[in-house]
Amino acid sequence: MPKTLPRFLLFPLLTLVCAVPTRAQERAMERSIVPLDVVHGADGGGRAYVTMRFGNVMGPMRLDTAASTSRIKLAPWNAGFPALGASVSTSASGVASRCEDVEAANVELKAAQGNNIGRAKYRVTRCATSDGDDLLGLDFFQGARFSLDLESGEMVFVPQSDGAGWRSFRKLWPDQKLVGLEARIGKTEAVGLFDTGAEISAVDRRFLERHRALFVLVKKKAKVSEASGKKIDTKVYKAKEIDIGAGRVLKDVVFVSYDFGPLREALGGEAPIILGFDVLSRFRWELDFGAEGPRWKAVGR
Picture (spheres, rainbow, N blue to C red):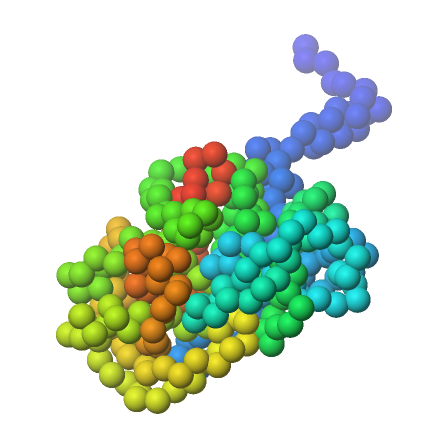
């Protein structure tokens, strides 16, 4: 005859069973969800901000994956950061500013769920003057694996990346710290700088003049602001078609055109286009800057 467990034994047993989390629950607990404050602009453009903590000071920084290092403006709250040496900050239009590298302690990217993403010591570029936002650069994410969804306004950090379908980024910049996508405009191959800090995608005027059939003029005169706050005189075009691989084809993408100048040289002449917020917000990105990276996957909407 089957025996019935005494009632007083059932509760500890059930408690033990319920206390063992599933693998899915464990993975959910390991995740860190970081909200983005997104400001939308014209033609699908925009800017994305995160909340950062430097010691006891907290405030917004613009997410800029085309900044190889983070940049802050000299202010009372960071005046005491130890100096590490002089540096030069180069804007999207190629304008160079004399700055200095400093060491910040206890820097954290604030998460709404899960643990903050922190650095005990972090080297940042501090500039005496700037008309733009403080920028959170790509180097902060060294070793990280996360999804980026500009449209939904969140980043989700995970301890490891899974699955197939990864594509390698092209490393750019003299120090190889920036990344680009191998794209195709019409039948012409071109590398596009992966730039969340650019409100609108851009094309080097020299490249456009060589491939005019790929673009349609939309506006003869326009002004755009780069992340540093500087205004740039441009013309506005649409690319008839841009393919970033694996069947991800976009039609009628807006590009502003200007002379990349020194930026062209810094990119090694490899990246005649900048893929900005308007393009990047059309996908949910999986980004891996760990040992297997830098690599990416993208899911369209």
